[in-house]
Image (cartoon, rainbow, N blue to C red; front, side, top):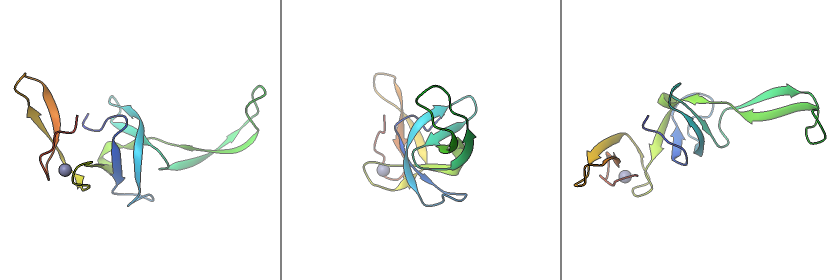
Length: 103
Ligand SMILES: [Zn+2]
């Protein structure tokens, strides 16, 4: 998957369109990511133990990777990701706008 944990992404569709956030979790198998501050859903929770409070809690739900674009650190543009093979044979991600290696 092209988007990974700790990437900064821009949401391009849905109710959080235009918002930016950091990827908290990536689920390559489902092609989904959980992004900080994006796609909050409300859940009713029961108190469990001493820590959890009963009531409505809000948490971030995973969104599909096709709904986000990577924000390049270097050029600060939402970008498509390309791949590049380094001299040592490693395959790394690269920004398609400025060519900067992302990994
Ligand atoms: Zn770039």
